[in-house]
Length: 584
Image (cartoon, rainbow, N blue to C red):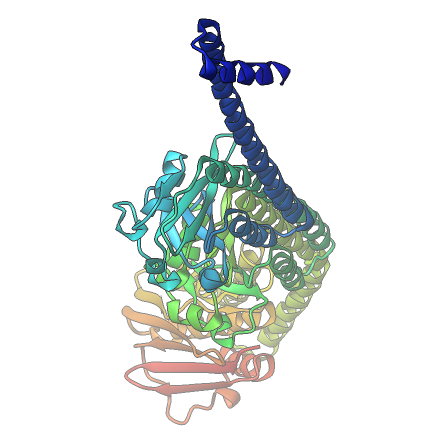
């Protein structure tokens, strides 16, 4: 400072004289003054930069505080949008997150003007300015005329025509695009490096917070799913009753996996139809919808192909058979998981969501594990029930042997056989009829027997043991495959055996050729069995109940007493025997 004063004095002297030394000092003074001005400018610039850094630090602090105090991802994003608007002094803000499975950017947070469109606006990578920023991982700043930019995509719902400028910054974490944050102003606005840096800092911090929130949610969901798998496994292995087991299974799966509807469909024994065995759907229309066959619709394909099939929206999928039912029941996305035991698909687990849902690999793995548990539990329950019923089967066999003994006594008392061979053939036929029922019972379902298969075995046995050599009688079974419980199946097998043997022995006693047709019908409430033969007609006025024919008396007693039905026998272009009885 003293040197500067001295220089000024010298300059004053120079004005009074033309001293060369004074002129030299004056030049030095001017150089020093220029340095001083530059120093002041640098100081001001550094002060401004420090202010900007302080503002940036304050902005990041506020974002960190906002994101740190919020545990829910939606709250974090909403706080980010509000903070970004405040620190950048802009009029609008939107935050998009990238959905990797759908490969879309989804609007997840916005200011008040666009908040109603959250979750409804979607962009592909490269689409619009936002999509371009996400794809290129670079920011974009448009000073004015943003809607005229060649990359711009217009969404009238958020009134984008009102905004002149836009600053769009990618959310990137570990070089992976998480999303994009946009701020806008209604008036043209030049965005400084500081503003770009502030918004980029916010974006970087939020990207890390979003990724951590996603990981936390994923870990929490995985923990819940593993806990669910453990609970379901423990619960279903404690229960040996299939119906109760499956009801428990679908209830727990739907509740813990947050599905709207879970259903288990099993392949019906003796057919290729899938039948709903358990569901927690309250829709009567859904539970009573027609059955699908293996290979049909989405569930049938999953069983046929033995693989998990997912559908984004069953209401619009060409393979789904019941889109109208799904619409009224509020169903959207579906995962059809086959239930496989020892390489065979025994059914399918259908899991429906209420809203569009992508089933990630981890979730599919959990469902496959649950499906495997359910399939094994079903098989285990069947084995346990079979074991528990072995003694009951012994009891039934004993009863059937007693029934045969009673029939033999009837033969001894009332029949007029001309030969021992004829008596033995009748007895043998009755034993084989009951044996056919028990053979099918051991091979197929424990609780029911296919009458069609029983009838076919009886016809084959009759041809082999009753039909005399040289005679030709064509035999056939027509109608649907009817399944009946053991008691009804045993009685009906004896009835069919008596009617077929009676037709062969009496209808074709004087004829060398003919036919016997066995017709089955079932309307869900009542079963009708008709045995027709084109042999010799019945005597006029024949009453089966009072007939001396032992076979007809056996039929009449079994139908009325054992089946609770009715039996008629009449001439109708041949002989027509009709047995009708209610389902058990």
